[in-house]
Length: 420
Image (tube, rainbow, N blue to C red; front, side, top):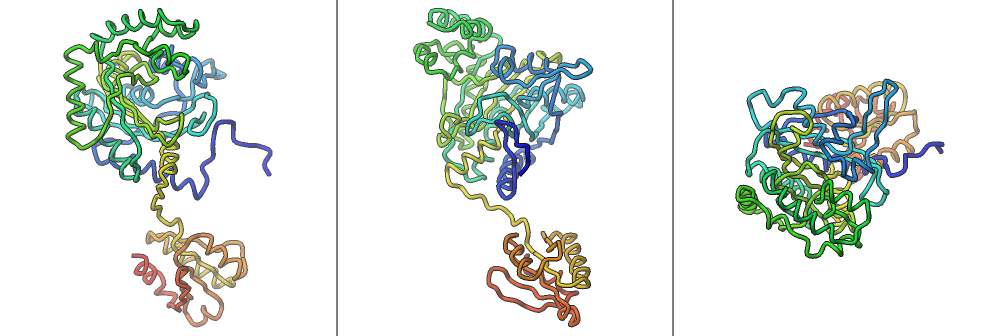
């Protein structure tokens, strides 16, 4: 056994379970690729200031959870705790917004890192698929992204998730609400850290999960009562578009999300089968983020869906994904000449798109057929010296047990026909 183990709060993806994660990533990405979103990949670490400015210096992510470090050259970097700031930075750096086709629509998939107390559904290293639409202020864009996420989850067979929806207002109406909320919070019995947070970003206090805080928030002013006419109209159009698409949602006037950059539309996907870590994904509009990180005004909207939490949601609902077989054909060669001939046929099968594997290591027939069973292959090819002399290979159906002699030169065409 190895001396080393995976770091605390992380996990290894291993076959066969890793196939579920790949299937989930593919299902989430499929509607995006079908809707004009191009793939983007960014570094696993960025300048620490990118997240301090974008995510928010008062957020738990920046103050408590971010893996920050200084390089030998003195650069201050951080492992990315979320994807939006990195994607927007990359789009600005490459001047994608100047190509004349707004919004810039991007999707991504990768690992993210937060120093949190590990528990089921919350890891220090986790996987997300995300989407960002950069450079357009349009309720239809907000609705599109919510609908696409809903479509992805439905395609996986999930049904017990809920979409929570709220509006956080904009730079016109949020300051009025902020002042009212701060007045309310100052009257509560809160600890010094929470009071300090209330002065920097009072909306973050609404997102505090501690029961001692939540009890005191009863009767707190709600942002929806302070929305300006423009924000009310914008939010109502988002609601109408989602409803017209047949996507169910719940209005949640207390929904804040844990990042400072959100404006107007904010939403969360929750699954009640996951216990305390019920959020499987979420997002919203972030019209001011580009300016926060030194770019021009680029109203934008996006989301990120957790791959690991989506897998847990599938397990909670008892959904079994239909996964393609990793191996369709398993070849067993007995003897050196048979080994050479059959290996060439396996290579040909692979070139023709058939998933094929080979019995390596010179195993005997019994051990090799056990390996064929474990592989999950539908068919086994067995080639011995007598078969080779007759110019045939034994084709065994691993489900029925039926075995047929097929000409060595016909075996590729025969398997392609049988496998469709």
